Image 1 (cartoon, rainbow, N blue to C red):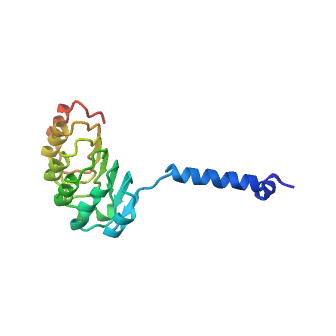
Image 2 (cartoon, helix red, strand yellow):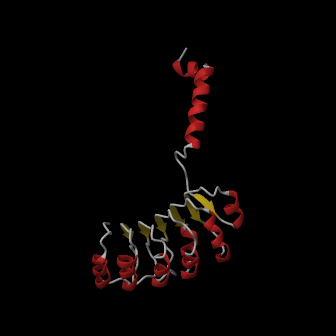
Image 3 (cartoon, rainbow, N blue to C red):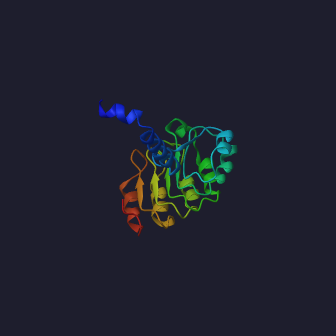
Length: 177
């Protein structure tokens, strides 16, 4: 009998496999970002969720994101990027998210320097994905001087930046990438 048939027929192997699968799922191995499309999605997710992606969410519901006290990674889905404004970023910055380390606002072209100034109120941020946002050199100065733990940024596709702005980044003692 081929070995694979033995494995399928062996009850002990099947129980062991099921135990491993359950253990992996409980340990968040292979965990995906929790998609947030509505207030109901926020209510459905665990308060201990550490990674979320906002797919669609009206501004008035953003304060409800404060439920996620363990949040470490926050991302705006590309399809919502054009709807995100500085007001959304201000709402995010007013939440109590002491563990938030990574924020992705890629393709949020309506986020400006004012949005970055608000985001600076979250001192735990270490990485920012800012591809295609509407910041200027003033925003780069904010990144260099007001984010005490910032290590990495991506500002590709930000068409309003100049050499002077990039030189402002040299003021940062924490930025490495």
